[in-house]
Amino acid sequence: MTAALRVENLTVRYPNGVVAVRGLDLHVAEGEAVALVGDSGSGKSTVVRAVLGLLPPGTIRSGRVWVGGRDVTAASGRELRRLRGTGVGYVAQDPYGACDPVWTVGHHVAEAWYAHRLRPTHGVVARRLADLGVSAMRRHRPHTWSGGMLQRATIAAATAHAPPLVVADEPTSALDADLAADVLRLLRERSRALLLVTHDHATAERCDRRLVLHHGRLVDAPCPPVERSRAKEPTKGQTGVPVVELAGVTLRAGQRPLVTGIDLTIHPGEIVGVVGPSGVGKTTLLDTLAALRPLAAGTIRFAGQPSPPPGYVMPIFQDATASLDPRWPIWQTVAEPLPTPDRNMAVRLLHRVGLTAVDPDARPRHLSGGQQQRVAIARALAARPALLIADEPVSRLDTTAAAGIYTVLSEVADAGTAVVVASHDAKRLASLADRLLRLTAPL
Image 1 (tube, one colour):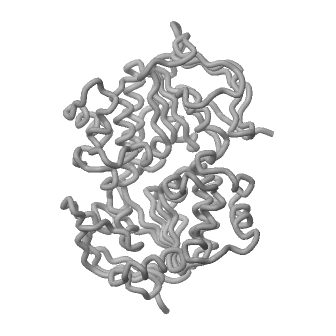
Image 2: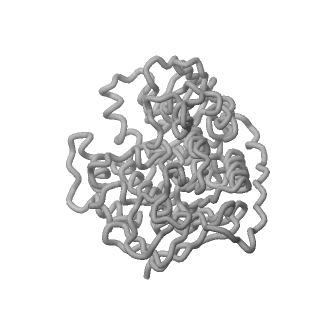
Image 3: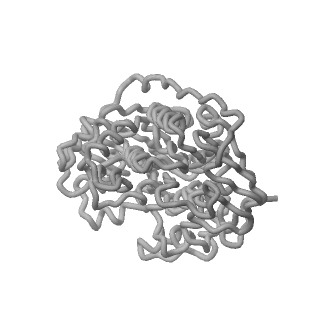
């Protein structure tokens, strides 16, 4: 029987000298689901790029990779383009980056056919999206979708041709627990073989086998246990001018009502968690707090004023990759909010968020998704804002790195900054926040 995926003695050295994968052997049989688990920066995304034939120019690679019996390492560019989609489906870690912002999400799914000069049969795109619970918005553009909703659309595109192998890179990081379970079930049902790349050991348990990647090598033992960040003591009797106040606020996405009648007051040093299922309006609320979205109804005040001064609010966007300038070294991105570029300060902030081993002169494309997210957090901290807005700031991070980021956010709040964090993971967020605001879908 032909293996869906066979990797033999794969070693990958990037042009900057970093050896991301060392002597990797990996096998996924037909009908099997295998989880590749590892911390951020362990080499998981490099394995994905090698399987898809997408390693950047100048990369030194040794070893062999076969997908459905076809040798990826010896394939031409034209052969690789034919392979992607029909021979191997791909669910990207960054659902926003996977979509063209100009086209509708329905067109994004239809691209699975257009890319191979085919035309989808009538109604097939709508049916595929309906199976994942998101067909009603297929004519909307990606920026109107939540990250979790868009991730489901990407899964519909990746499985369109029932390829022998589906590679899913953190496919459930932006989903609440119930939706994540549904998506993994659908991935297994629709994938003839599945390689699931994740930092979440609990997610990996849903697969037939679990392989742990550490510093580019497979190891026998799981990653060390995590020491969770301590919750702050709830703040009582807050006085003084609130950092931000919402009164009678109604939020909409286009013409679609999301949340009505929000009354919320946040004081300096307070951490407020915003929880709720994917698509309920968490990101819309955070955009409103960051003065990036007009209100449908109600009022908002920043320290008593109708709009915030520059640097008063700093957002950490859910789509960290798109928020980083691909042309800049990461230290320059972190230093962007400073009055004058300060490389030393930027490096200290990178160390503060756990990026001690990353080259400050590296470009975002050289970093993993989780590392890119920590760069975005460091940039927000550089401004020393009165209000820090964080949208799913640890969704791409392994549990160890996530606990470290929550510790940083707690320290920021202890220094007087108000922090608002949105997440679908209420249990984890409860370890950080002083109080939780739960959003529910409108009736």
